[in-house]
Length: 187
Image (cartoon, rainbow, N blue to C red; front, side, top):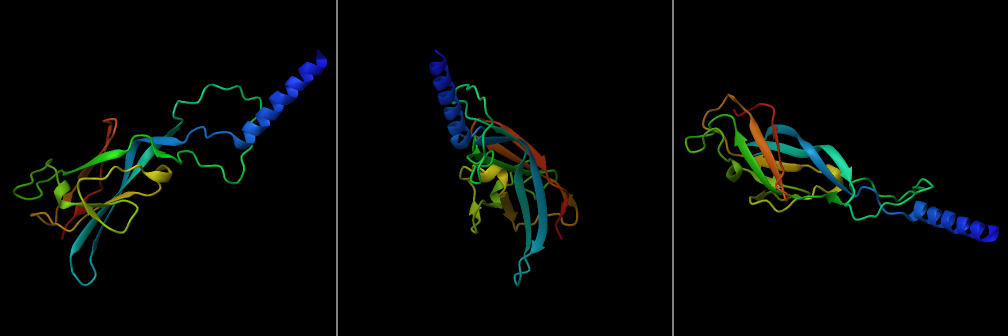
């Protein structure tokens, strides 16, 4: 009897060590509760065109599992090696499928405060090419390290006053997250 218990203990310990060294990832996905915005105003070299760029990054990150792993008893801690994935390495659980851009001031005669300015902006994520909307679904790989860049060269009708842009990201599950830029003044 003691021999059977000893073998059972060795098997349990061995499987625990195998799982500790090669176990699955506890939290491969992430979600966010807020956005971090940073904006820059510059000019295109040689063209004299004003360019406004707004970088949009997820903030308030929460990491979680996909819910498919059964509850397991772990008598040993996981032994992490050099190549273990970071939390959230699988990307955003619910991709971003839409971006809405509005301003607090009238942009021009046809775009009053609060109306969509999406048609005036281009977007870029993980590339060198800026695209027109609609937005391709974005997963924010690597837990939001790479921001979504929004860019426009269109100036409002009234120059010299500060504009606040509201950026709203909509995810596949319908969740909307909004943030407001710092004041941007067009000259």
